[in-house]
Length: 95
Image (tube, rainbow, N blue to C red; front, side, top):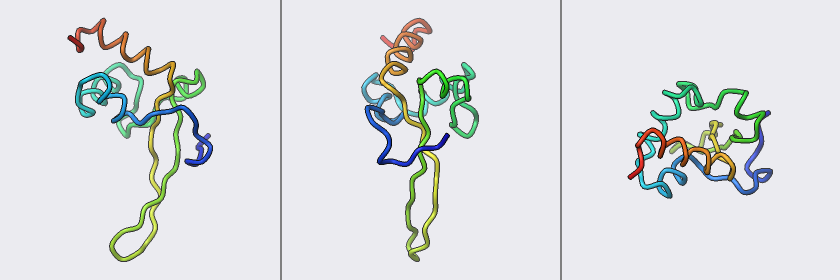
């Protein structure tokens, strides 16, 4: 189920989580994809959405000509952020 921005509470973007953990977002995306948590297009697998670890939202932006486009953004819930930190530490990605 896709949510719109106004419906999402207490979630962070993957980029925000990566900053808090002190690693780059590219490394975090690669780590999550390598562990079959995120798909290649950065969408989380349904299992992790159903478990309440991730949420997906649709956002809109306009290009220089004013045309509107929709795109998907993956958000991390609070309980998943803690799990990611533990998985990174176990894999020795964190100091």
